[in-house]
Length: 383
Ligand SMILES: [Zn+2]
Image 1 (cartoon, rainbow, N blue to C red):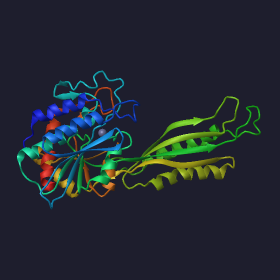
Image 2: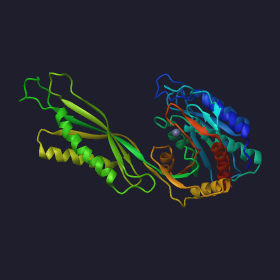
Image 3: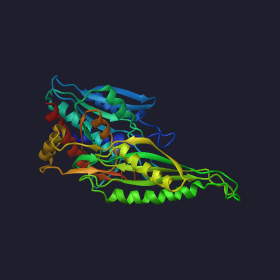
Image 4: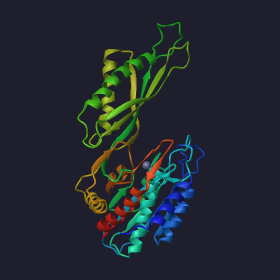
């Protein structure tokens, strides 16, 4: 299927030039409203039925639907249109092209993917073939923070399959890690700094906890790794404790991030930490701590023989001239939400570098190839 290269490049440059920094990450940032207008106008000009949804005021997702004739499977091409902050970047909105790379915040993560999804829809329209199923281009809000956009769309649109187009260097990504955030609050007893007989030092008790946590951290990384995403891990991300120099610390808190692999559950990960607390409490009657998971994102795994995976593999093989590698990636993506909602999901996207870094770029040849692969995969899956 022929990709309109001019449309693809103009659309990508247009997307990168619009500031769509996520306001939950950078207070005061504009969010998705302006970029949603740009995307909607472009999809509308292609003849797609286009809707803007606001999961929260000012946070916009766009869905363009290329209607099928009926009776086929519906497919979502999913790309987030928000980005992380631009602080420290010399040219966040330049969309400058040098040596086959387009630069700017979000070019790689993931406006190149969004432009390719839009160009794939255009190729299907230009080709004139009427598919049986619907093809939806979903430009979603807030993936970089709370996934407001994809969570909202899951309740609104009904699709059988989804291709999340996060960057994969044109490999087929079948798994990513999940994570959970766990707070452990160690209780002490406040007392005047001179009154050792009255005080219980929560910070010292926290030291004992961290000593055991470090052993768990080593143990996690020594476990049999998942073949595509490696072993689980954790880190003691944030620590606080104490209220003044001449006071025994009444409490100390650590916030832990635990990265999970497919097959692990939240309950199991929390229980491993609870076991440390129980062991310390059994050995020391002054040790008291509460464990609480306060945020969870599940890991993602797709079967290599799932029909969406096979459609993408076939399309990629025909466009690239070789079968794409099956890979995994460590960061969490919206793919897990879609898969958990019963949508047959795979991740496939372009090449580039600098996802959240000071310099970011996307490889233009890979964006064009991606557009072609998405169009072919949609024709296969929805046809
Ligand atoms: Zn992303």
